[in-house]
Structure formats: C-alpha cells, structure tokens
Amino acid sequence: MRPIPFNVPWLAGNEQAMITEAFANRVFGGHGPFARRCMRHLEELHGAQRALITSSCTGALEMAALLLNLQPGDEVLVPSFTFVATASAFLRCGARPVFVEVDPRTMTMCPVDAERRITKRTRAIAPIHYAGISADMTALQALATTHNLVIVEDAAQGLDAFLDGQRLGTFAPLAAFSFHETKNIHCGIGGALLVNDPQYVERAEFIWHRGTDRSRMLRGMTDKYTWVELGSSFYPSDLQAAFLLAQLESLDRNTAERGRAWNHYQEQLAPLAAAGLFALPTIAENQRINYHCYFLLARTAQERENLRVHLADRGIAAYVHYVPLHSSPMGRRLGWRAQDLPVTEDTANRLLRLPMHTALSDEDLQRVTDAIRAFYGNTDTMH
Ligand SMILES: *Cc1c(COP(=O)(O)O)cnc(C)c1O
Image 1 (cartoon, rainbow, N blue to C red):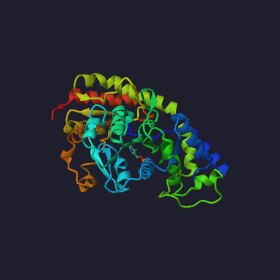
Image 2: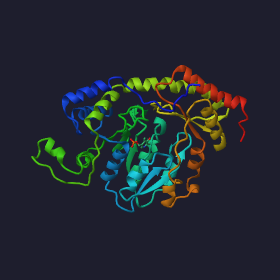
Image 3: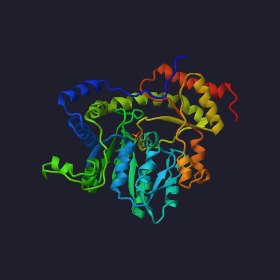
C-alpha cells in the first residue's frame, strides 16, 4: 500500500523564481531586499511595530529572552507540553523554566495552574498555541497584568490563526514564529520575532545585528557601528528570505488547502468522538484555527499505541507528540519529576497526531479515517 507520510513540506510554486531574483540582486547576506520584503509583509499582516526574520523560532525565542534581561534566579512559566525551545531559550539566559500543566481541552497552557506556580521571582509567561489553537490569552493577560509579568507568545504554530478576530502573535509584547519545514509556511529552517511593543524595537534590532547598533548606521544616524548589547547571529541569508517571501505570499492558499484535510478528519471523526471512543480538542466559537495539525486523545496510553501501530501497519504515519519536558532527561536534571504535572503526563501519553499536509488526496484522507474506524469497529480495543 502506498505510504501516507506524516508531513510533506508546502511549496508555493514560485520559490525558485524568487531565488533567481535574489541572484540578480547579488545580495546573499542577511537583511537584503528579500528579508526586508518578508519583514514588511509580516509587519503589515500583523500590524506589528517590527518583524525580524530569524534563522529559527528557537532563535526568535532566544532574542525574546535576551530582550527581557532575565537574571539567574528569575522564573519563566512555560508549558511542559511543548517543543524544547520554549524552555531552553530562557534557561540559556540563566532563568529557571517553571513547567505548567495543559488544559486537556486545548492542550495549551492552563491559566489556573499557571497562577498557582507564580512566585516572587516569576518574570514572564511563554504560552504556545498548540495546533494553531489559541492559548487562553484573556486569562493569561489578566495574570500578566496582576503579577507584572511579560508574555512571550510562542506562536510557532500560530501563523494565520485568530482569537476574537485578532491574529495570534499579536497578543503579547513579543511573539515568535517558526518557518521550519514542518510548519504551515516555511523556508526550510527559519523564524521571526514579532515586536508588538515599541519599547523593545531598538534593542531587538541591536540584538539581531549581533549586539551592534548597525541598524542606526543603516538609517544614516551614524557613520560607524559599534558593540552596544549582548546579541548573536540570528538572521538568515537573503536566499532563504527569497524562498520565504514566496511562501508568505501563498498563506491564504496554504490555509485553505490544509482546511480541506482538517475538515475531512473532523467530519469523519467527530461522530466517533461523540461516541466516546476518543476525545477531540475543543475549538471555541471565537477561534479560527490554521489547521496546523490534527490530533486526538485516545482513552488510554495503550490504546493510543495500538492505534498508532494499526495505522503504521497500513502505511499511515501517525506521530506521538510531545514527550513532556518536565519528565524528560533534561527536565529531571532540573529537578522535576513526572508526578509534578500529572495532567500533562496523562494527556501527552494519549495524544496521537494524524498526517496533516497539503499533499493529502481525498483518497488518502479516506484511507486514514477508514483505518481509524476499522480500529475501533473491528478490533478488540480494550486495554
Ligand atoms: C516548531 C516549534 C518551535 C521551534 O521552531 P524552530 O523554528 O524549529 O526553532 C518552538 N516552539 C513550538 C511550539 C514549535 O512548535
């Protein structure tokens, strides 16, 4: 049987034409003409003060951590159910990641648990928008206001998703996007830092320019540049930016095509969820998702594993995601134990992601949902 891959990176179609144009420009370093067009595009899309493209979302989060001037002993609330970078970016600055439980309905940060974990040392909160489903930004913003915390939105999965009609990535002073090939829009490996609060713009540019005030020189404000801040090398080549611009301009088409796959799953699987065979995330009325991924929560960890193997046997790549950070080898070294976040342990062990990309044909999608139906109908699914 023809294998159905988990992910196939999106191609807009004109990436190579854009790269050819970059060759004609003869600018291959960073912040060239294509980088500027990508950044303007992201700024206009989000109404952001500044967008700085980066070589990864990890890099954008590290820039955010530098911008916050975190000191050893400071604490940052992060979900345990996330990619490594949400925690490691802050750890690199000497801050302690404090892991917070998920809300099992959305697999995003639970604001009630977040509040319980606030101490005198808490400086920031870094929620993610898992699968393009918004974290509870209203509750988290209230916490941030009450306890004087800065929110860093890890919007790696949030491009082109909305809460209350507002784009994800615009709910906090700083937000990070990923353009890794596993994300909806990509340039192989890449990312962006969105600066929504003007107080961070100038320093963000310094940090981006490896800690120099080169941005001032480029604006003609000075004729030489110098070291002003702790920065690093964060930006991609203009060849990558050329690829990225083609992708950014195809955003609407990408979201629509992913929606076709997502809606197939939803139509076919919602009845099984209603019958109690597994749970699907709750997508509130005020949300518009970007169809980044489709996942279900099986009744037990064993049943999730049986379903994964059942699909793999039929050539369908379904993935497990994420191994919680708090109980990872690194998390344990930081002093955490699995039982510190029981909800995260339980739900992460029951979560399964289905193939989700724009190259899924209607026939592929039918094969996936037929295989799931067969698993629950024809096999002994009891643990
Ligand atoms: C993909 C992802 C990242 C990391 O993105 P890179 O661009 O690969 O560094 C960070 N956080 C979340 C939530 C992600 O999904």
